Image (cartoon, rainbow over all chains, first blue to last red; front, side, top):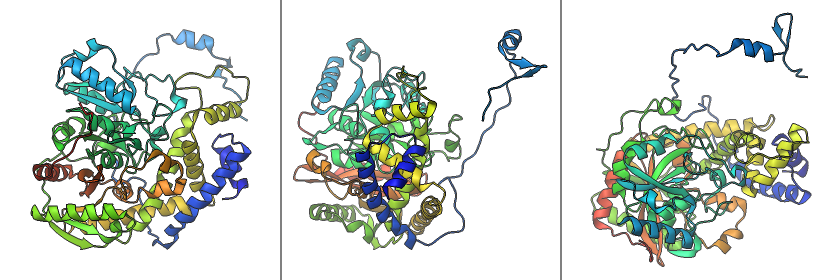
Length: 90
Length: 442
């Protein structure tokens, strides 16, 4: 794996790496990924599951609860014309 | 053992072998009425200790609850005496990647306990009657069990609720048990097993049936290459002993096994890189006070300081394998290979009750030997434990030899949900094979 890719991946992973670290990890990952290339020899399947065993979601009924003080919630919100204002995202 | 003897044994074992990240020190706490004592790997949340999972980034994290497995053992009469040392977040096979203390092998303090449940295996080895709760993702119960000469059971994925377990890989993590012999595991596996509404992956299990037996095993030839000469000889002696016990041993081949390790590391690190995104300095443990930077700068700084070298390596590897452009060749392919391995085991189980291999290719290495191993070499040490873990199948490591005084284990893999037959065989094995104990063991 070249150092440029390591830096890119590190940025996505929110990791600050020193130049030495980039160099070390690039060598390690190159080594490791070469070994993983054995997977190219494995047959491709059509189907696969993300889980090794079936997963079942057990749901419960909604439990309705009243907010303790709706008035306070409204007082602390930023509103405009009866709508709640949220922070700008972009 | 009296309360004071237990306290002294725990203190002594900890001081000499650095078993615990944190432990019960108050003698009064030891006097609480209990049926047995147990420890929990430090990636399990308990409300009475920190949970640091071997990492600096969780320094000061005190969970507000008990993991289900821990709560159930307390209900069964267990006294939790401490949290055992481990590789950071489970990343390692020698417990050397620990920011809270590196445990030393009970048989030779210059050697590793194995990992990542190294402290758990050492506790099981050194403390009489102790039950250690460990966790396996790619072999982290089997490996230290083999190196420390104890029995290590990794249940089927989904058998034990993972509620309260600090995740490494959600589709691979399994909570299991280690003890000096199979009796304690047999007795308390039912306590920690069973559906838990807090973990959906624990909901589909059939009831635990402890009555199974092993009458025949298959030894795949792929498991016999890459072993040290002495391990190979010791394993063959163990096979011969099993045959004398009346177990039929068939030699076979499982060609897909050679893909297992790569598939395991890709899936495990991909999942880990996602799971560790939450460690950003704002939610768990001691909160960083300097907040003058942008979020991304803040997160990056905290993570770079708090995460160890192996953790960073695995995050980089896992992130890469699931990135657009690389995902098909690595992550998707690994998922397909997992199916292949599962089917290959199913094929074996049509004609035998279990698959038998050595647990590890060598005995516990010295710390200086480990330091000179490359990352790839450390990963490759898992080639025997990786396959059952990838497939989510129950497996057990049983001490079967002592090579120059150091323990070595054999590993049996059973079909999904068949933990019972593994423990039955361990019990039968123990009738004829005498386990040694490390010197200085209480």
